[in-house]
Image 1: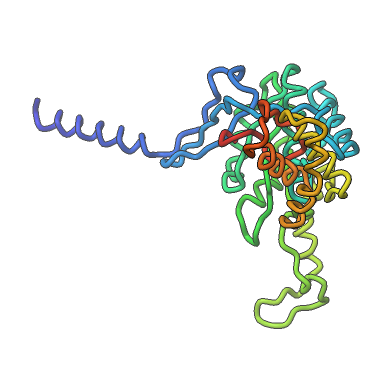
Image 2: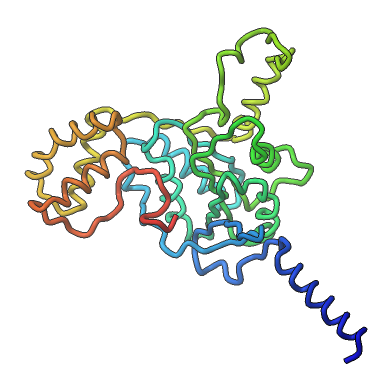
Length: 310
């Protein structure tokens, strides 16, 4: 091999190495039927991939308690979506642990046989939303882009990417994609007392603070459907505790005996919610004096999947 050929060969090898570390275009999965839920992840080289979630925690709409109004709104919107009718992007806000994510998971299970699929996207990856939408556009399935516990700080790039996808991009909305997001903040951005001042003093003050407020609420307004969740009353909390303990094989007498401890547990946690009820039931049923049956996740607890899968 002459020197020129060796140089060309080495140049080709170098090009291959460079191409291997450069970000690649997002590729659609070979088979969308291997899972009903997918997770978007970034590799170390900056390439994004869609990974199937093999084990999505079981959840039925009929299992969710104390959120009938919210359940009706989300289920109706999702049914319209999978049936090809008009539907809205959804923002679920309110008290922690009251069933926001569980409701989305229950809708996924209910409508997956009709072609509903879900793609979970972390906040840090929201700038890649246009690529994800391009991959699924034109598919027969209906896709929910799911963002859990969504909130932003000032200047985060994902904020504007989300606004553009919801409403504002020059491209037309994709009819087989909706965004469902959960958050503890109604407007997704921190709000300050100074936002109410008519003017700001100092070099960094805003001359038109009203425009700052408009910017802060502009994202949440692009969600067509707002659904609010509220802390449980004591009776609602105890009903969910009883439902969990019953699913774990405890007798009615044992469930009744657990009520005082359940109330103390919630008092120590400073919250009455489905999540707190589930945590108490796991502790109580797991003690040596109880023999729980196989646990079925039937209460309204945030989180899409059991264990570490999602």
